[in-house]
View 1 (cartoon, rainbow, N blue to C red):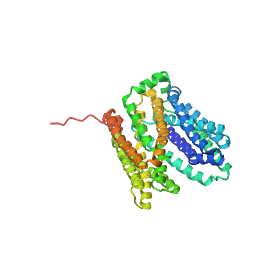
View 2: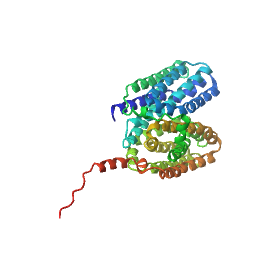
View 3: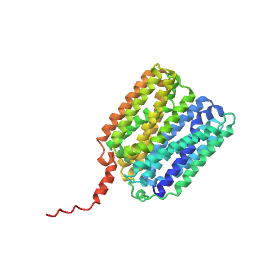
View 4: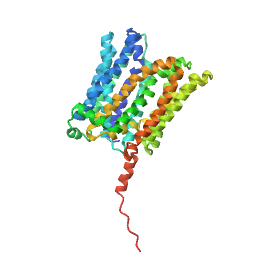
Length: 422
């Protein structure tokens, strides 16, 4: 990695570290520590998603016209203000406003960081760059969550304030690091087509491969990440008799698989077509949902149910490790040079929609409709494989398999063969 990429990745890891401090404890903080009730805590979580959905449609145009750097710095500062506000909030209006600032800021960071990674990479190096980003995010979130758990004390509100102050500090560090980055392709901003927002979206919506990728992305995030916080835990507790401590162990297994497998999986993914790698993820997640079905519906021993449930999260982690170097760089490779920010923002918007709808649908089903819940997401996982293979037919050979770009560059520089003498 060059100096610019190293700084981008370092800032990305630090911001994830800050988020890890507070995300696992937000509900407890609002509902119990500030004594604002479960309803307010649920509203705060909804505001996070709503703020992201409001901000993201305008983010892509700002990135393409102004560049990703000022957008990232502004988003990091907004998130820092929101984190400080949350740490000192004791009333419903201030908590909601702080949540909106954090939600909008962290959502806008995603396409801005993705665009900076695109500008600092090539088609041949982009796969590894996005894999590194995902790896560092998970390491940062995991370490932040572990350290935060050693600090929090429900009987001491100031311990939670310390967490939010630390989170704000990490966002400020991200903003400071970002200002030192020298983007190699900054001239692209001057060359970007000054299209209106409607025109930019029309261009994207006419791009059939991108539309298919967005549909695929929605199903991916709905069937996996959208179930982590509500559907799967509710199913595990109600159907499989899983204890809260086991839920924590399952999440730890998910993160451990990602950290251990990321670069092993990367070598395999780099040599294969992206569409087929994503299709394989669908099959892996199908097995994961079958394991979850066994945990809750198989009538085995509690030990077997617990092992099957933990393996569900571990298999999800393996699929996530395969998606990191495939989906995000594919969005960048599909984008026209002047619309990289717009494409990244559109895909982030699809992700947020899936994360908002996933818990709303999966939570009630996982709690009460156990067999339909498992069958529904087995179908969704198989749908991932079908959609991925169909998407492959819309991609160019290099878009589907970036390693071909490296091969072609080498071939172009090979010397002409010398005719054999007779």
